[in-house]
Image (cartoon, rainbow, N blue to C red; front, side, top):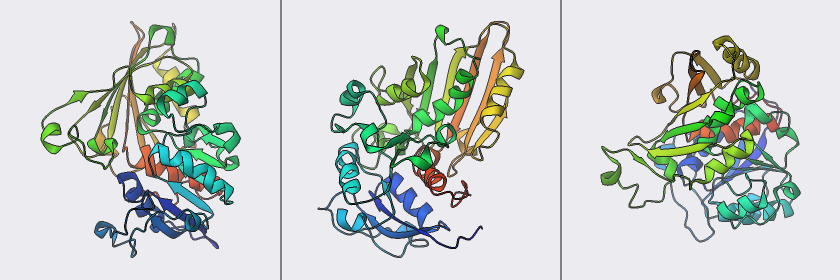
Amino acid sequence: MHTYASTVSVGIAGASGYAGQELLRLLARHPAARLTGAMTSSAGSGARPLPRLNAVWDGTLTPLDIDRLATAEAVFLAVPEDASAELVPALQARGVGRIFDLSGAFRLRDRERRGRWYPAATADPGSLGVVYGLTELARAEIPLAKVVACPGCYPTAALLALDPLMRGGVLDDSSGIVIDAKSGISGAGRTPTERTHFSEVHGSISAYGVFAHRHAAEIEQELGADVTFVPHLVPIDRGILETIYTRVRKGVTAFDIESAYAVAYSNAPFVRLTGDVLPEIKHVAHTNFCDIGWKLDAQTRRLVAVSCLDNLVKGAAGQAVQNFNVAFGLDETAGLL
């Protein structure tokens, strides 16, 4: 493991949730991070232990204290969107120079769309110095960002599969892009609901949020094209698998597709291209990797791409740490391998 002469002080708000606990696990053993506080998502919640993280964190979670949180050089927010909408400006006012926000509060740049999906986020992302932090696609902008809006788990898988093909002029997006996405139950968050009860989920698969899921707006914003996005809930604890259906332009070959991916990800340590060997959730669970495979029917120009990642790591906490590494000029893989 690479050692660093100095460390960056970091604090976490929302460390009690699934993504927050992943952050705590990663940052507590990060070679260049010095964890100064792990807090809950609100000031009113009491301190609580996290027994499963005893091996890496010997403290307890404390109630949210914004003044104490603001003493860190970098702050990670794994709190609900409404809380992030308040905390980001407040932390900046207290002098925090780097904020990594795992919520969707400031991902959408269009005010109307943001007002629909994240009504509490009234501040303009541009005025806050927000960069949409899909690491592989924003590596040059992240070091300049004051706030990194870490992408949602569904958009991360979709955009990593589609963006190189769109930029490379490979896709015939006029024929439509369909994203059939399946996620483990942890993607719904830690707060229990009737829908996420074991008895409701076990032994079943269900579609939800058809034409009404906020991640579709995020995908369309970054891709610059309309998509049909249908998420599904599957009875596993973690992981996302997206099967994407579209068509390529006339004359495009399998080599063109492979080349577009190779150019985009030649220096991307966490994207693994599997070609016509389609990836599976078990290949990426508990890692920061996104695996992408594809098959082309040249006669009909139909392309099927499969993108797979762990929704709590590459889709949330791991990507936030990856962005932290890039922002501070560290090895991009630090604390993640």
